[in-house]
Length: 388
Image 1 (cartoon, helix red, strand yellow):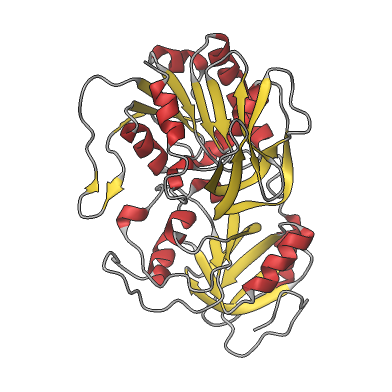
Image 2: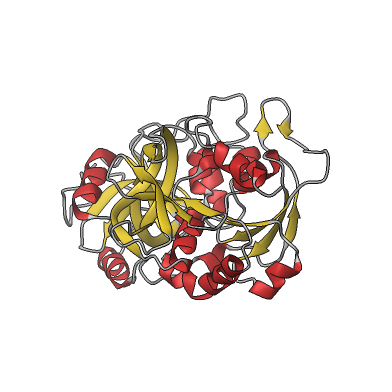
């Protein structure tokens, strides 16, 4: 198959899938999953496991995920490992063809599951070259397409990719968020038992604002001792306050934080004024930063994977974290009253903040994703423990 340096490459015999970049580069491969086409930003993820969780993470909305690990799909899929039931990534690019699943928890094949979810897969691509291209030139806009008859209108696909406006300025949180409030039940998953039913004494009430949340975040809040009510992204301040929260959680999500901040920031500022404890993750962390006067920037390639080292500045401890973000709080221009608490050891970008004089903090990474495997769960315990 063609590598990532080729442009307008001729279609190889047997090619049933293609990735067409906005600059006209054409990468041929073998399509699997759903037939059709989808447009998005091409990113790469370095995790060796968890492809189903990645594909169902709403933070990947409008993105095409290139997996750097070559063997994707080999353990199949199951209902327990879904992170959400809304749209996440629109497609994925992998090196090797998906083999038959081999795992005692498997309930089906990755390809069939992608087809059922309307997501497109492309195999046979030099993912190392594509990843290097993204590292050097940034995440490109592209169209991924799959047709079993191998018929593609390449000029039309190039135009579609070039015309797509990209993630900057795009508010996707309202697209992937819940549309109604719900009381969350159930803790984290354990082998042989499934999702735990947490019981016990009265628990602090956490209202979680869903900007595109991973379900395991809510499970982690429950495990840490909270009673959780989940509300949609555009829930107004009065409605949040009416639930009488002991604390408010700000979830992860996709898109440009500045765009989502148009409706999210005033709510968070109102919560800060009332001294309601806050904890944000990923997009929620960025929302907290914007509410406190910080700014966010689009990253060159973003951070996506399960092996990102983050330094905790208060004591120098290094956490191995899971990340999925293409924007970051600008730590070169933090306003007074915003303290940097964590930084990436890959590039020095901001990975945590705390608001001076408030019980309000956030981290850029995903402490619920267990990459360490439990390096960062203390953050949930810290938040819930502070609620009394």
